[in-house]
Image (cartoon, rainbow, N blue to C red; front, side):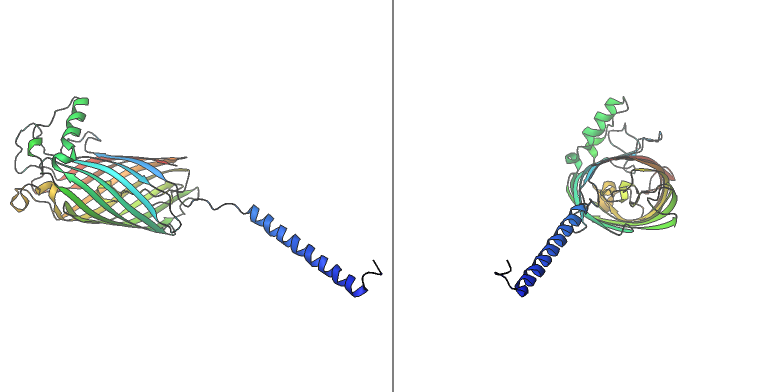
Length: 330
């Protein structure tokens, strides 16, 4: 070796070998570190929800806004922070006198609304959330509300409504919906495993050839391990999206106060429009109270709502209905 290589050349080989060994070790360290970095977790889970609002909850009378059922699918948040969602639902309205074949013109008309919707939602650091939604549906015979109510009443052996032949006329319906919610912590923090309380400010608007309504209100929540979502407003004035609570255990109570500005509502005046004997009140107030529990992949909520008069000839100073929402996350 001494005769083939000069001392300078051997020194060069030695230094080169050292550099190569260092580079190999560094690359191995980087690969090892990269292998130890956990894969990016999902920011939200997908969910499937079943919601039902009915004036029968709490033994209230079967009239006016009598039922609203909705199945909603919320997908995972994508790389841009957008959460797509879809839903299908049905609303049913009936008069106070369900035995009359021709209802009083001052009573709430029979009306049904069957719809499909799609939309997107996103939130800013779990503090503010926005959603936009498009509903496409139909009223009248196409809504299948008559068949739904009659079959349900047959099953529970209740009076079968007699005046569905007079229901609001069939039409294709299009509605654009916007929803914004902002959470303010009152004490503690969401998801901290202890007692906390917050207030969720919410605004809602829907415009289309069925109704024009703008709502605003505040939901107050208080309980153990509050979820990092945006509350549960009445489905009557909220979008179809279900936000991931991001906690596996929680129980809390809530109450909500809101006001609605009603521009038009064709479920009331669809057949006669401006010549109808009843009209929607332009301002309506609502108070809701309820409870929500979260366990593992399941979230269940139940609430009771009390609402001021929706229309001019309504027979009571307030109207009550209840709601139940069951969600499975996956």
